[in-house]
Length: 279
Image (cartoon, rainbow, N blue to C red):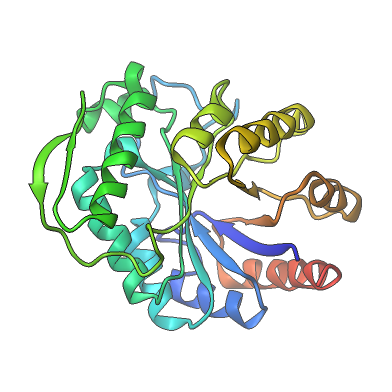
């Protein structure tokens, strides 16, 4: 059965994460997703990939793990997703503990969406090498898996290097929460197959989803495992929803604006009515 979910930039001026999560669970949504940007460099040297002026929510977001932790405490079944966590900007040992702690506190409800980001100056402010971002992301994810699954974890790579460490808690979900790659880069399918559990592209009418899904299915055969498919920014028209379901997407994530409750709640009601048709 297709799952339906919600995504919003949780900001200091929009409906707050706890109320949003409670209302999402009331309406039987499967999960709630928050993105992150620690900051936006004021130089605005790197252009916004959306082709417009950068929306102000990009530098008004709550920390996703604080927001999702608050949401976890106020809900019982709602899954909690990062959409996406900018792994390149975070220390992998600290991030492994944050994700594992949220997974334990929530009773195993975490979905770990990851990405490398697009803002070069933002990455570099964290000491990251933007030109090597995907190599860095890969090492950090592999290191986190070691921390989640081993009593004394160690990792020795080009960008991540540590001798045996003890780190608890471990995630409730065996092996750690599902890792979903939020990217549509040229090598995205290769990266999903290498170190992720699923793919979470953004809905884009110009993107060749048919070709990408064929590549993913071929990768599944080589890997001997199935990769979960989630769609970020899912459409609301029935014919478009049906197309993505037919392509194999098992989770459709509807977008919400970073707005007050009077704007957001009616939109949630509309999405809930749409979702009910497919349950």
